[in-house]
Length: 403
Image: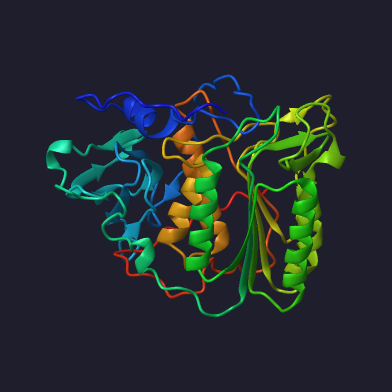
């Protein structure tokens, strides 16, 4: 990867395309596999790609903001209470016909309130929220969205039934670009997991032998008790060899490498499958490329997940990118959603993170479409073990796209 891109200055008039370019796409500048795919033309999204706000919602609308962490609160949709979306710069929603009130909240600026009268003629419209620097509060720090808890104000978990392993590699040998932003991924993900009550083990910048040793230590920790939730997170270079996905150790050769030089994601999934069979929630998060190396085999497949949820930040054969804020694009979305709704089911948090990543990349030449594999047995457990933080509405449930 090179260095994070820089967006253009904000124009006086904010069109949807400009808002998307400013807040979503052009900063996704560095891929985890040294390959930038050609641009993909935007296509009309099906209704299933939209978040349904209320039982009678049918009007497709896109909410956009020139601030990347804007929380949208929607009332008057017949849900019995306000609905609150996790902070984002773009959200595709279905609204009911009639009068709806939408409040956009972002750090350092007064709320923007829009009263919308939707009908069939509103189908496909954009509702834009433009926060002007003329209204910015003096000496304000952009560290929270009004109505959402500050990270350090969120209660720490106490049930002792959650375990996580955070694995990040950023400093590689010849042939692999250094991923400077992965250090931020590690810090942010570890902090989010700990706030949610996870005992968190961290492995950083490891050779293959060190990675396997830490993996053995983590498996031993898993075997010591029954866990309510187990999460494994990878961030770094990734590659697909044949039909399998691999995480790249720091000492992997820059060329001519094979499965023996890499760490197989499937090994983690298969080892944790018995844990998921014992009523534990097991989730493997891979924020890395899945580009094919060498002669491609048959179509790239995911790990045999079963009840283990395996979330890849990139679709088969594709790349994963960083964003404008010094982190990986998908990881930044995940921690934002998880910190805002730690009491939500894991699959709901993953679905929102995946949709946000995909929506915010659509205006760029670096389209990124995360994929969730596996299917939980019964009800998915909540991400965190703490009580819900104080909010002014409920998270709208979304249909989870399992593969």
